[in-house]
Length: 288
Image (cartoon, rainbow, N blue to C red):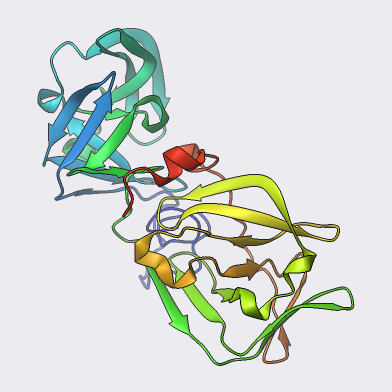
């Protein structure tokens, strides 16, 4: 989703193309200033606090925040022997992050042999998102991964007829669905609960977390596993889908104005990094 993940323009599964005479490289990396204040919390201390962050967009990955070493609290980064080789950015050294009595092995890294075309990242370190206690923009915690400035969600009210069936049973029928358009995804259709036969929805323990929408709950329908989902307490920014239900068209029959919907190629949400499976307190912390 966004610029470099799912089906965004820099992702391996991009659905569009750049209109240029010569083919572009298969891997395009993009870096730009965040232009927001970002802070990192670890071991009950702020270990970084700056308005000078570079976001790196790498194909198949969510954006990663890079901080100047001089903006990191002295003594926080302890050099380790672990090194890796980045396919585009060269040798990479890893650090143990320490703050107070707390430490995180391989909690940060720095590219130490950057090619000339990637000098924006010179002297900068990135922190492993799941290893830190929290990343903040101003005073609000940013969950899952750095926010993609090219990720957008639009929700539109519709009067189209949407019918959901499981085998011969009508699960939902509505003429007031809401379409959710999200960067990198085909439209998803959400149905008010008044228009759903909720007796066929079996809640399951499975949860996922979206940094843009919140904590997601799932339902089985008969033998169809995880066939429906709902953001029971959606973030305010996407409040128009709060407690509505969406249905997976590869699990149950979903028809829109009589046309059978199918899961579009490349639309399966693949858990990537620490943005999935957070618990409720973590998933809802500091969200308005």
